[in-house]
Image (cartoon, rainbow, N blue to C red; front, side, top):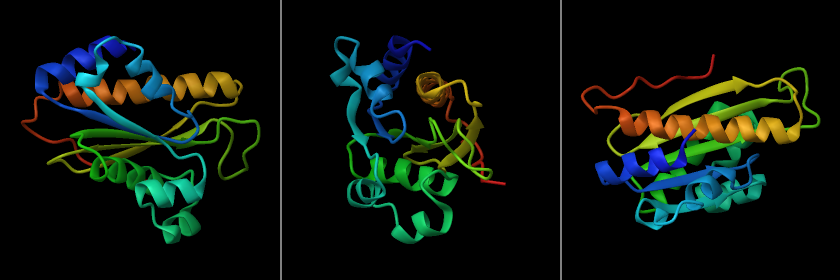
Length: 168
C-alpha cells in the first residue's frame, strides 16, 4: 500500500487524517509520516495500547470495553470516532487486535478490528482474521489493511457514503 498515494489523495481532497492504533503501536502513523511533507495531510496519531489509554485519550466507554472487550468492532468504532472528535482531521482509522502470541477460542491470534470515521459519513467497522503467521506479520498486515481503508475512503466519490458494517 502506498502511503504517498494516500497523502496525495488526501491533499487533492483537502482532507487531514488521524489514526487511533492499538496492536500496531503507531505503524500506520509511521508509514504516513515517513513521507516528507506529510504534515500537510496527517494531523495526529493516537497510540492507545491499554484500555485506560483508549478511555482517557479517545473516550472509549469503559462499559463498551467490559461488554465487548478491547478487540471488538464496537471499540474500533469508538476509537475511530474518538480520534475524529479529538483532532482537526476529517478522516480517522482505528486498529485494535491480537497480534500474538496468544488469543482465545473466541478471539484468536490474528484477529484485528478496524474502524473508519469520516466527517459527514457513518462510521464503518470490520474484522479481519489474518491467522497466526506471527506477531510481526499480523502487525504488518493490519497496517497495510488500515492504509487500504484510508485510500479507499479518499477515493470514494462522496456521492453515496458507504453503508456501515456492523459486527455479526
